[in-house]
Image (cartoon, rainbow, N blue to C red):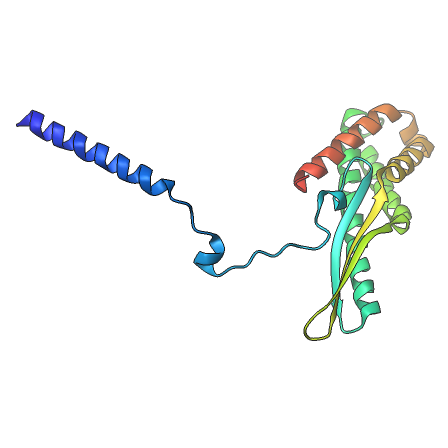
Length: 196
């Protein structure tokens, strides 16, 4: 009797396994057919529009009944995004660099590098250029303007180098090669965060 129960249990388990394997082989239903959702591809979203080793890049849009105002909104948004991205990267690099090479008091060094990173961003953000743009007229006759702006990484590194090497307190302990290496490491981290 015990063996018969064991055999029945084994047969039931095998039957269940076959059932599950055949059901899992059928093609999955698309999300759109299940939920009614529709996938939308964003303009200017290819890899060529993303931050890389040579350029910081930001993509944004602006919408307005006036085309010029839609463009202005998109450019302001893109420049704000790229400034934030650069500020975050430069600050992270400066923090890591200052942890490795602090001269004098660590707090003073950190404060000075933070101030310099803000200066670098504010002085270089005007150097952005438009990489690509697309304009759409919506059904409501409003315009949606998409833009990608970019700023060369070299400009930011050079400006940071100049600021660090020209500062009397910081230049005593400044190593340009180590700073560049740290900067490119920070840039790789940014790219990973963005999914590049």
